[in-house]
Length: 390
Image: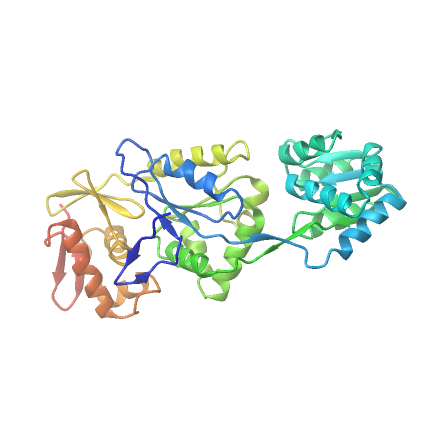
């Protein structure tokens, strides 16, 4: 990925932003889409870039092996000693990891015999593929690919006294575990790996700032822990409310499925979701939604402007803008022709900029230069700035 720097606001963290080759026919040209994935992020970035998007990569979480596998060994031995009647496979990578770990301890054959005699439920296609790769067959899989539907399915029957092993996917899944236990089941949690913050949180912190200042068009989430991790860090840096306001307004929170979307939907933030929880489907709905949200444009100083995520079309000419000038342009365009003071514009600057009226003046200077016509942004003496709209 190509790193884009902005000398006025500081250099972006390495690997944060990539720039696609220009192609006016691509539907996402001029739009910025952030991805928070750790696994398969290159694949997701490629799908978006082929549609013209500038991709901002800011991993929110990463999968790490358990530092102590004693709980996994104990859970595996418990399944072999007293076989469960039902086994829930949550993820493909987790189920494969369980089989590989059991083989390493010399328990693989015994565990497979247990699973052959159990009802194995697969949360989704990836878990299903891992089950079949192990020479086993799943007995049921939820349409929604959610553990919530798995819980509802099991509670629809009588599971009192039924022994159920649950392969976890980095999260303790308290709703599922407690729901099964409340229904009378005996539950064996099987921890395989854990979600942890990335080694470098600077890209995610930068993304939070871009979202809060509306300098990105969409954020693509592919896991529930990534959503929660972003919200948690936004809380730590004092930007949570600004991020949520952006998600309720200009920035599209796009989630691969309802499970991923839950942390946002549960607090009243509506998310964009594809019909099927797949990366390709997620990219398609983003490519449909962002152009639909594109404003009709403004005539400013005799020029037609169309504002997008990281760029503005000036008379159909694509002009990339750094975050600070773009933030000023967005703020002025929200009330075309109305004057905004320097003090009002200061909070709209990315937090990486010095929070001062001088920084606003510098951003306006650069904005005028980028637009190619200094009369597009007018200075109103002793009051501030306005767009010269017609």
